[in-house]
Length: 348
Image (spheres, rainbow, N blue to C red):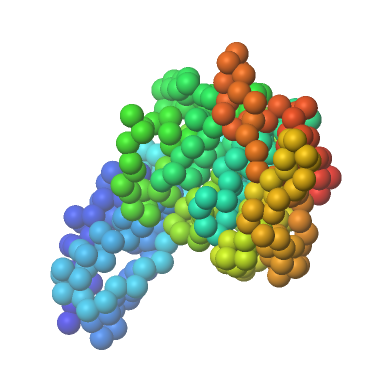
């Protein structure tokens, strides 16, 4: 049977990730119970709910099991500001993180699968909101498949001053993306906790100006990043992107179901690649079929906000942005109408 002394000795080898001191010296162990060789711990740490906590949790379990425990149960709470300052830490300033801003509306753009034009919708929605005079930011949260900088024709990198990152401004939209921090389009090979840490840094370590809207271009599906966004932003609203194809709409319903389970408000559905319109005859061809967006909206008890046809922006050499539509372009007008609907739905 493992003893309390053995548990404490084991935890002397585990450091709190923020304060860099072991858990015993920090008096971080607020509760310790042992029953039938099962150890239950309650720990106070500097920054609970972060990727570092997940790593700490694994370190604690390994250390205590290594000392002889059969199983380990863990609970975490936030260390008091007094304790934090006593051990050389600093309490986080209220409002220092974008997550704490009350006047910013968060809009997550998601889809069930890749290839439906979700990033194109995210970029053009953000630009269209800015064209309507709103203060807008966009986070390219599709960390594996980042594409926003290329879509917007961004060649600059964010400025880094001390520990703070300043987003790139393009089309009056503040932009941050994993693509800014990767050389030569290298692949990202990360596991869940590392993804969560990077996403959290985008919120807390980027010097965002005042924002009316923050658009998050999420990766497709319901993986680690999507789950992190749902937990970090319980107040976020969502737009679901699909094509008219029945399979795309079926898969997108999963993302919608996830939003409803986490009580995110679904603003509506955008049906991308809805049709192809001939410039010669004006005739519409429904390349991917019909009805996927309407079926999805009905299933989610929502509405179709826009049906966007297949098309390509007119490339301007002076303002190169291969995926941003001019507001006078027929598809650009659809995005402006979409932005108007979003403003109407989110006005406080």
